[in-house]
Length: 210
Image (cartoon, rainbow, N blue to C red):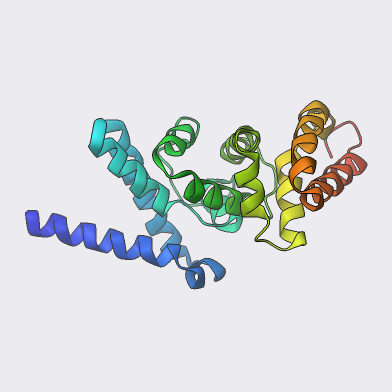
């Protein structure tokens, strides 16, 4: 049994390493790969629930390593698709805040912001991700800017678009104003890209959900 357990752990580690590489990230994952990723995420989420202390943290780290690196993959796993055959047995509502406490900040922000790039709002799990990003960006503005500053303008603007996206972007005016003030003091260029994204959303809003 120990040998089998070690083999399974090795397979999991190899899969995690693969999905972490840029080459894997940049190529669309096959349906089989996505199914394996969902299987791992479900497995680790259940293990997090069943364990405490050091073991719980180990599974939180494994879950984070298996978590998508981009919005396309995130959407395929956590988004709503009528024809999807994927079966999630966990929700991100409680997992994301706990992950944030367990993962080094630079690694955590890098992955979370990467997932937000090119994002499109949806209810449920995608909405949970958006809400989490809305919370963590103001908590560490400098680190958020540091991560975003490594992306090109189009990607940065798409992240801000996702952050404020939804049926009623006008509801984010105060949040936007407070965040814009903080960011403009550190990096006016990134603040301007945020302004452009938010103004685009407002221009698309007809008052009934854009």
